[in-house]
Length: 427
Ligand SMILES: Cc1ncc(COP(=O)(O)O)c(C=O)c1O
Image (cartoon, rainbow, N blue to C red):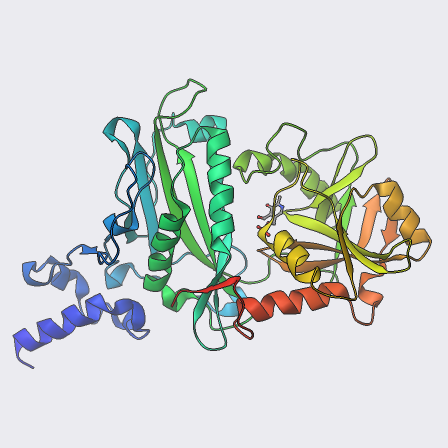
């Protein structure tokens, strides 16, 4: 093959590498490293097309998708993809990441960049490392039955991110612009979105305060980055397919006026000790209680729901109200909205205390208990460990459980079995 034609071919392969599975396994044969050094085919930064007029916002308010710069990974930087059964949760990462710097003295948000996945280099005095001035999000990209990739209500994750940023003195931004940048990142790494309905691509946008000074104050520099990880099941379950949860009334996850309703890292680190204790006692998750009445708030990193027969004899789905202690879950909200349309179920946000739970259970009126969140969708609960006792919950004994109907409905939307406005097709 004449040299010029072969260079054109190699350049084409380079630019389309994310679509070509075979390239991952033969990159060394094609000697990409050598070719990359050749000036004729050196990869250019690809700028996102300027299709829409730039919104009238100052850089201090937000970065813009139209400024996005893309630098693709060279083929030798691409990672082999693990088998679906080895995925676990957040063990593997895709080939690219999104990075957006914020420097107050340079006018605020800088240009977003998609770059090959790399370690971060940050000053050891960065505020995020000392005072947990940071926040994160978790959402997923699903490959549907029609091979199209969907996101699930990403606008709600953006709202939640901005609320956490505001509380932490981190810069806010236009959520729509971040969604567009994330969509482009997923499109570039689209072969990492598993071809399976038991796994997905988890998106982890994170915002950290990078200013390298010890003062506990609003950072004047920050970094927003997003990494992607193909994932499968989050929690291990018992043999009945449900989890056992452990409630220790002496430990709280959140408190009034605190940040229980924000997705900030400082809510998660302090849960490790009690989670490990729960595991040693044979439970998979912690049920977070609050206050003298031992109100149920959340379970692990999920919102909590119960189904019971109410005073009128109707089947009722209940979850605690958003009182500042509870993360406003995207799954929680979707469940409440979907189930409110079902005529055979009463849906209510109400305080649920341990006493009430035990009473309903002892009278045979408690039917189900489950947790809900992006990572797991819906996880049934069949046992609560509380004050040296094990309280069996009959969730797995129901013939047509509500948790299963909700899970099936959510999965059907996420994987495109049904068209629904919650699902945003991106590719
Ligand atoms: C503490 C906590 N509660 C609830 C949830 C569920 O929220 P979502 O449905 O938005 O994933 C999460 C996960 O983000 C969480 O970390």
